[in-house]
Length: 376
Image 1: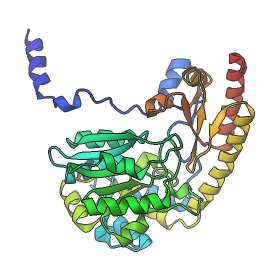
Image 2 (image 1 turned 135 degrees about the vertical axis):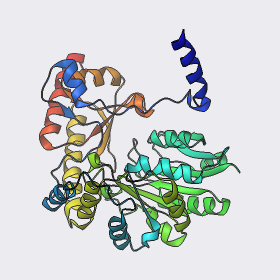
Image 3 (image 1 turned 90 degrees about the horizontal axis):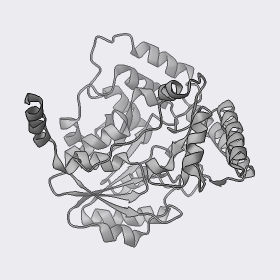
Image 4 (image 1 turned 120 degrees about the vertical axis):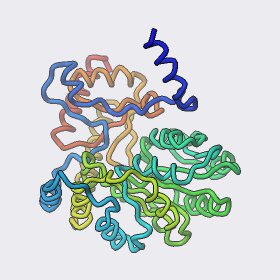
């Protein structure tokens, strides 16, 4: 009886606007799959991680950063902010640091959102934008992109209202992998600025892009100033497990962000590793070239297997298949984890991270087995 009364009381404390929110479904953990199927060698190609070894100086920084676990890290990430500011040619007061892109967005939205505000996002895109907006109390307004991943300007502006506080884009977009047209971005930035709507662009995969037409919004920041660009050390720099990212933003936003973001959220180890990553000249380009080489090979060999493959500007591929759910489950039983498109609002697709050559070989061999079993 007491238990039922307690649950009734607790249920009243929960935010009603979050009851219908579906939680983010990450890629299946290796440890979970090992328990389920009993295999010891699992290949995870589901989380768009950088599989290549880190540079020696970054590994040394990680070791050095773990020397005082009993001490709190610098809550302002002072040195890292200055290294990033110097790297991009902006002021340290225009840099903020957080625990991954999602950590930054949660605090950013709490810094700018007021009751009744709206946040606009495309569909499909990274699901955590929607969740971060909901956590701040914002109403998330979503609008479908075209089949090729583009987002017509008129369509975007048509869903923006007087209540729209921010618009969030991913460029290159996850999971579609396309880059946004340069003219579109320039015109969108101008229109949003005129309407007093903050444009937030997640450039987590920007370092993988080799298209000369790609426009980083950092260029627009230098011209307009009233945009926010997030970047991460989780992808090409290989620090996914350390949870460190940053944003370039107007000073007023950085100042408000610093008032409310969780203290000590970025560890000493993460800060030092990030600094070493920025200073590791040539590492990111080396990873990009190796990734593009393997991405091209994977696309070619999967196409030869009869699969419909959409290449991207990032470190993953999209595979279209009418039996994608069955294909996903069958690969799991082979010890290969890819990303189910259903989790990313792309049913009928699998998203496949580009891994090490031997990991990609394991994927291809498993695909051959599975497809033969299907009679495809």
